[in-house]
Image 1 (cartoon, rainbow, N blue to C red):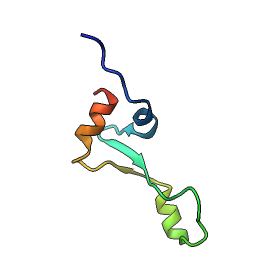
Image 2 (tube, rainbow, N blue to C red):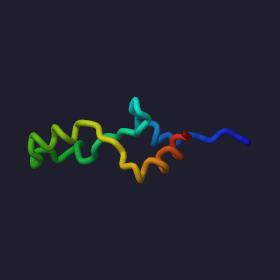
Image 3 (cartoon, rainbow, N blue to C red):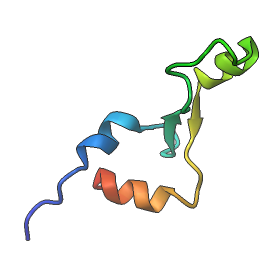
Length: 64
């Protein structure tokens, strides 16, 4: 049986936390930033965890 390939796009976008969950970056932080509040831009810069319902799909993409 051959090895399963890791999805290249997924491995660039997701990281594992110490507890094994996945973290991701927020969207909407790349352009048109003048109309967004300072607080909103600051929060968009931080990482967040992937929803539990999406984790099995992401794990499959990451080959875990």
